[in-house]
Length: 132
Figure (cartoon, rainbow, N blue to C red):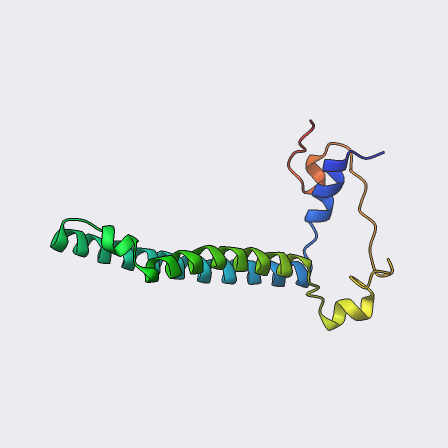
């Protein structure tokens, strides 16, 4: 019986188009979200510094209804990005070639068996295995 981590290592050595698409979508959406968020946060920080420099405190800003709206949007945007990431991870990014081959169709056809570990481990292309 092969060790589960060795089997997972062998599976992860095989990249499919759907895995690549999923990784690209996660990377693009994550980068867009975090760069937009960083820009908005920086803008608000600069505005708060100028307001504080002019008035000596930021109490009026933090008690304004627009601040509450900003905080609600900030937290709901985090929920939205988490839901989007979950959707990307759960959705099927199967290409037409994979669908014809039966990969990802749920019937088990089209899958190739995971190769057994060769003696020596180094020759199989996986430099080392983690054994817990």
